[in-house]
Image (cartoon, rainbow, N blue to C red; front, top):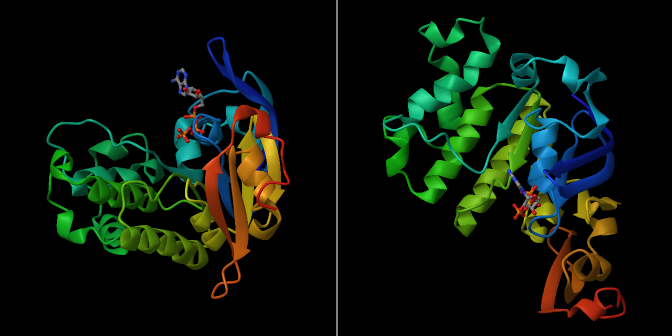
Length: 271
Ligand SMILES: Nc1ncnc2c1ncn2[C@@H]1O[C@H](COP(=O)(O)OP(=O)(O)OP(=O)(O)O)[C@@H](O)[C@H]1O
């Protein structure tokens, strides 16, 4: 599944967020979206998921305009891992994850006694089978995060859009979840677009990094091309160095200190 985003503008009311974003993601790519808090990463994912509509510009999935697809048709093509879970009191993990498969059934799918096979597989793959009968409200932040991933996996789509899949996880579970996403992508030939706040994760797990700034694409390339002191300064407002991780051969960002506003264009810092 490929995505083409062409000159997309989007505002929340009078607050402009995306200012002419153009980006093409090919089938099978693993792309990380990075950028400062509030720069529009989640908004871009929501636009691609059809949850928001661009003010102007177009988005296509495999060449089909998103606006011509129904919510169900979109849900068959892509699954989204959101930052929150639906606030349904008393809902268990299994009940939630089972909903992932409904996109593939008919209009009355919600009423069917769905086969538990795909639900059980998603629960097992994401390491939450032991939580299946727990009520969502009672889970820890990290457990919820894995359940969110299980829900997306159960949707059994060719594309995953992930909004910070490692949020709330301890370091071991961060690595486990990202490794799992990488394995799923290889096993199911998925296209993955994920927001990642941790630059080291972006460098290690993604093959392509897209950095957003001021409502547009500031840089787009391999981790080695994008992870530079200029990225730290211009996109994140910090001075720092970038070294190569001997073990993985990937860049590692070493932020040092926040830059004052005047220094944001001082690319010599940390060179
Ligand atoms: N529903 C909304 N109504 C109004 N403004 C919103 C809404 N959602 C987001 N925004 C604003 O739009 C901007 C972009 O938000 P978005 O969540 O896309 O950023 P982000 O890059 O994902 O941020 P973060 O890294 O903090 O998750 C922010 O200034 C945010 O406050």
